[in-house]
Image (cartoon, rainbow, N blue to C red; front, side):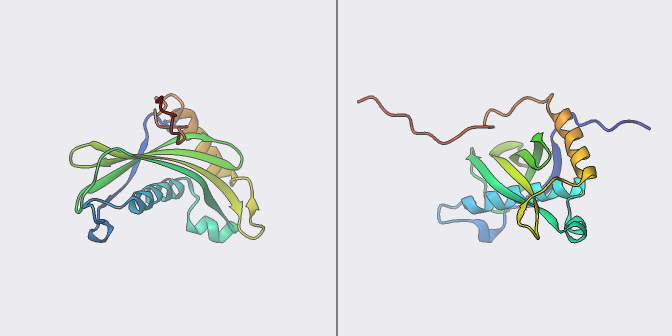
Length: 165
């Protein structure tokens, strides 16, 4: 039996830009970038077993506690978007992901999204350890993805350097 390797970001999710997502500037509104990235997060969570069945069985889920989006290129109605997901880190209760959004037809990088996620006991409404199997899979993925180039947008904050007058 061969060992699974994680030597590239996952490409689990694609979806088209819907007409109702277009804003008054003629491109996809910022809110829908976050929605599409969230669908990419869900695809990874489903892959590692943190899906609806797990939520029902364990009474636990994940909450996003921080997110950072960079908008690099416009996307327009009808374009197919492809999300890739890189696991930047995981510990007992936290998961840090990095998504890239591409226009599928051209391969143009449209946006990036860094996400910090906590695993939560829904009854106590407090952080709780990931289920053992999901944590082990996430740790394996994180170990494989550690060899990938660190995204230049990862860890960035928003700042407005003072201008010299």
